[in-house]
Length: 289
Image (tube, rainbow, N blue to C red; front, side, top):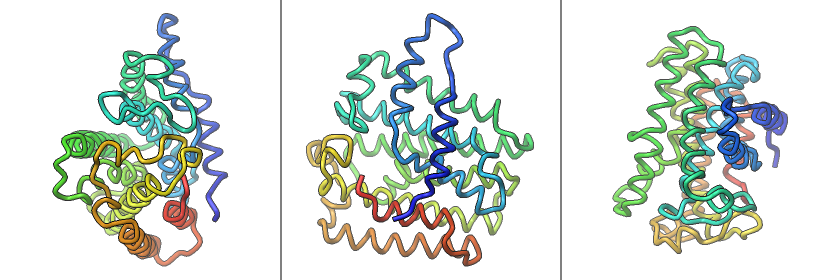
């Protein structure tokens, strides 16, 4: 199964070069931030941003600051998700979580700082027309706030999940959607436009697909494959696609979502086949970690 490793390598190189704390006394905070940020992974969200740029005829490198910001935000969310008050996980990507390594207080601050630095990075480093940049930053904030990622996480924490798909559209899907939509906004695409609407439909379905597969892997994966304890959702009594539909039912939903995502993608790209976006979609559908 192919994956656009050349794009992942661009992201990894860019993330490695980032520095945050200019105040010497805050060097320990930067260490904790970089510990979690540089823990590896497929970098799906920033790679998705670079692939979207390529799909609309822009150089992937031109959106590296935005792509990196997406990964900073994703890393912040993982640090906070792992905290004892949330999922209480000791491992992330095969090594101790940030709060285990540095303490809960530093982990909370590291997550807070990564979120703030993400917006500084976009506003200072991302090249775009001012109006286009503001539109992208506004979407990024909306996708990660009370009507996006954090709102979805709140619904999950409360445990009263009436609409499983809607919760995951917020918790997981909005940031994945922003990885696509913000690139179009930076490029000057105005909302609404047929192009933006088409790519938005693709990104929304991709976010759902990601979460269905994630729920399946939480049951079928191993600690080594996942880089964290298997069965975390069941231990916390969370409602998932597997608990709601059974393992076979969840796999059927994943296959349907995969087809829907590819259909939406081909509509958005005018029927283009074999693109990096298609590779990412197939990878998400068939990933094992």
